[in-house]
Amino acid sequence: MKVLVILAHPKAGSLNHSIAAVAIDSLIKLGHEVIFHDLYAERFDPVITHQEIQGEEPKDPLVCQHCTEAESANGYIFVHPNWWGQPPAILKGWIDRVLRPGLAYQFASDDNGGGVPIGLLKERSAIVFNTSNTATSREIEVFKDPLETLWKNCILGFCGINDVYRKTFSIVCLSGSETITVWLDEVRERVIVHFPFPHVEKLKNTTDTDG
Image (cartoon, rainbow, N blue to C red; front, side, top):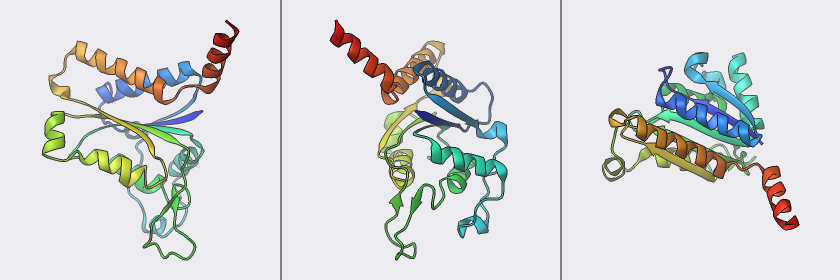
């Protein structure tokens, strides 16, 4: 399986970076092919052009590379902080420019764009790891957890991806090393559960049958 890992946090050494590193390490140990992008380190340009909105192919080589890799991936992991109930602008721009019409979704041939889109990334799965300084109870009760709706319905579901797991780690600013260790163990366990390597499972089942 080819898994695309997208990290969006401006501070090197952040918890987000550690989460991405653990996720990548877990995927590699499972035998998956990993494509990794640190959007801030790459200085990904999030500003979509009018021409791209109209359907023209992006002219930025880096954006074209991301489009090709996003289309070829079987799974996705997104890692980012919760800022104002949204992803950082650089990741929102990545969504705008990479999950584009014809790649991630399309409308019926007789549809002028006002109908229900057809997701093109079906049979894929995704994990979204978020960090936050808001208590989970407050995020749900007061803000209605906008990232849950945004990722599962407005973005991934829109593109045809319904197998989505999302986890928020909070409150980061009050967490100690022991808590962070537990969180990173949870990241590793979730990646293993969500992206099991089929050959490993097949080998295990064969071994069990043979006694």
